[in-house]
Image 1 (cartoon, one colour):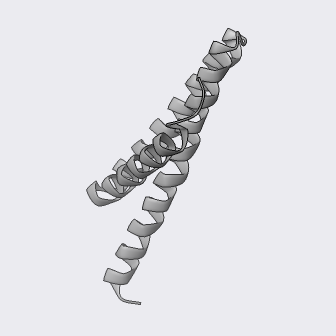
Image 2 (cartoon, rainbow, N blue to C red):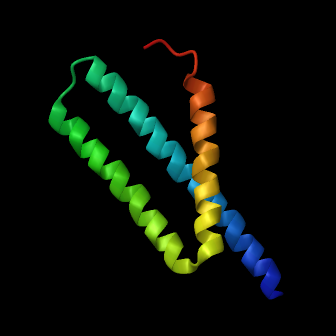
Image 3 (cartoon, rainbow, N blue to C red):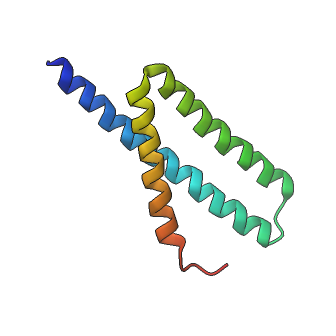
Length: 94
């Protein structure tokens, strides 16, 4: 298989992984916000915050160790997920 095809395939997969991780990250933020507004447990919210930052941070560090382009592909996926999440929740009640 051609090396260029493998590189492009890997970048597309990392873009998809970035979208998936971004959706988890931003939807967890939405859940945390709703939980705090509803008077939810602080320890559970704190654990969720730490978990989502650890997951995303670990994934970004892993991508950075793969190189510049993999990191940029994953960051682009996370940005796409942010845009999609903001559009979905734009008119949601507080």
